Amino acid sequence: MIARLAAAVLCLGAVIAALNAAAPAHAQANDPTPLQFTDTAQETRFRALAAELRCVMCQNQSLADSDAQIAHDLRREVLGLMNQGKSNPQIKQFLVERYGEFVLYRPAVSGGTWLLWFGPLVLLLAGAWVIYWLPRRAGSRTPIDGDEGQEW
Image (cartoon, rainbow, N blue to C red; front, side):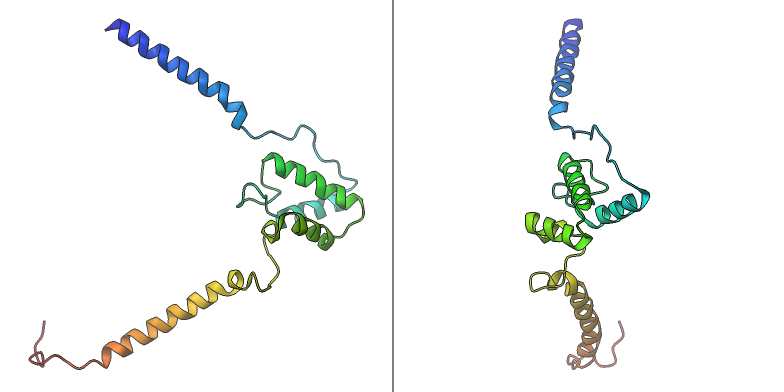
């Protein structure tokens, strides 16, 4: 009994050691050096722009919120473009050309994104129409023979 317990503890220790050894390979790398802003206006502009951009790896996090290594790299690239004198629309256009419209939290209304913008409204209107139409249709049905005057 004690031998089995010792073997189980050793196996558990080996599993924990293996998981700890594999963990750094899957962990997100932290940014070793913070971004350097020239003034508070540049930092404010950067934070607003980073909040409007999506991390291309995380999908549901903004560039400002993501801790993925590519997000760190993109933040540095955005700051570099800002230091080159690029405007916010120019920076967004650069990222869209490189990663597609997915990188924008609010993509422009176009042929490829009209369903994204207007799909919820269409579904809401269709649901309202069904809610309006079903009771009217049910009221126009003729009663089944023998059901007149019978209460349930």
